[in-house]
Amino acid sequence: MIKKNDLILTGIILIIALAAILFMTLTREEGGVVVVTVDGEVYKTLPLDEDTTLLIGDEQGDYNVLKIEDGEAAMTEANCPDKICVMHRSIHYDHESIICLPHKVAVEIQNGEESNVDIITN
Ligand SMILES: [Zn+2]
Picture (cartoon, rainbow, N blue to C red):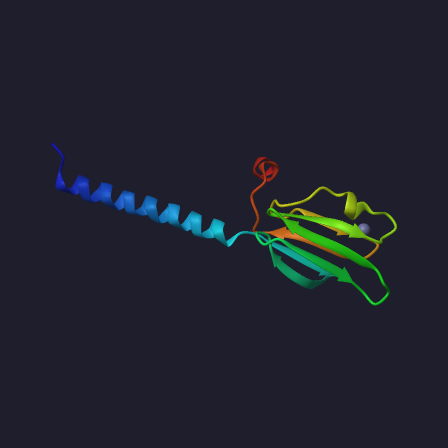
């Protein structure tokens, strides 16, 4: 026999579960952002879920091309001497970054997906 209190308790648990699912869905929709810093200062913040191409250039003619596509950010072009940033694979996990040392340009993912590696180390 099911008691009235049990039904209420089940209802409360269901509501909490639904609220949790809703909360997770909402925060996931918010998505991650790509923070571009030049010489330690924030140059631009871009949403990771919008395909864009950003030219990061300065007066000396140094430039980096950041491309955001399919939720991943990558440096597709640069005229720096080492090209390490261009060779770096695309990033999309939280706190992953691509740094161009010669141009002092850094691209970092914030509030992105949790990477498996991070979960293990934590
Ligand atoms: Zn570079």
